[in-house]
Length: 92
Image (cartoon, rainbow, N blue to C red):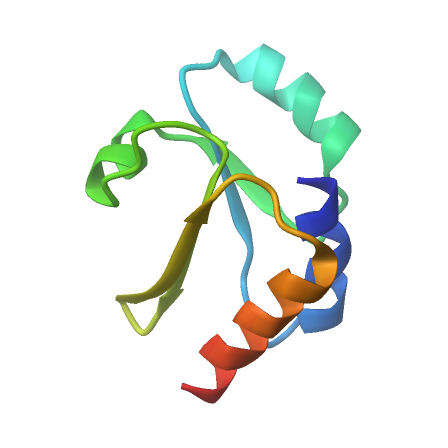
């Protein structure tokens, strides 16, 4: 997630980033978010969002454009790969 947070700074105003904690407690998630995220990412807790997108485990990422899933993957990816996926989504 630190990679996502760092890359998010380059897309402020163009893309909104949201990190969702799964199977966590609010206080524990808040502590971890303070360690991992700057103001580049919004975060919350929402088990139901994983079911909505058919995500069986973490870490997972989903890119949604105008309500349509245009890309998804499991696991971490390098910053350059993330930028390429985000740029493709912006040009879609």
